Image 1 (cartoon, rainbow, N blue to C red):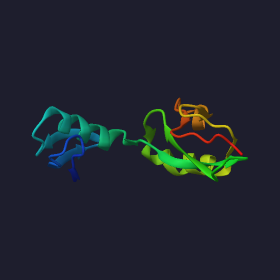
Image 2: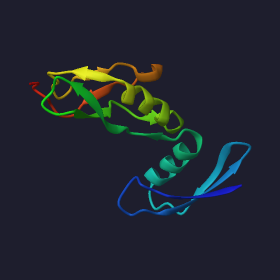
Image 3: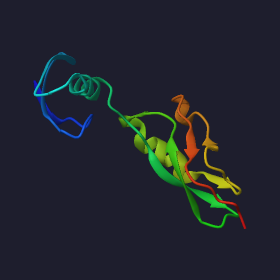
Length: 120
């Protein structure tokens, strides 16, 4: 089986063709650098994404504060992570870098504030 991807490892955006057999990557073609090969293999075997969103703030100057994941999250866990974040509320004050959700879903990834809210 073959799968076509567009590499996002650098600005070139190479069209990459990945040949897969029995769930394993057999070959990668179309990439112009090593990063493209690594990206394609990871995207096929274990796709991950950074998560950026916002979380509700109680007693804050603003209703929400932006957050991000401290590391990559498995792509198939993104919606579950969003359910946890959407159901959570943090209490002001919130500072940049505060861990607002520790070890989300047991993935070893924290959800961290990327802005502050001094509170009312």
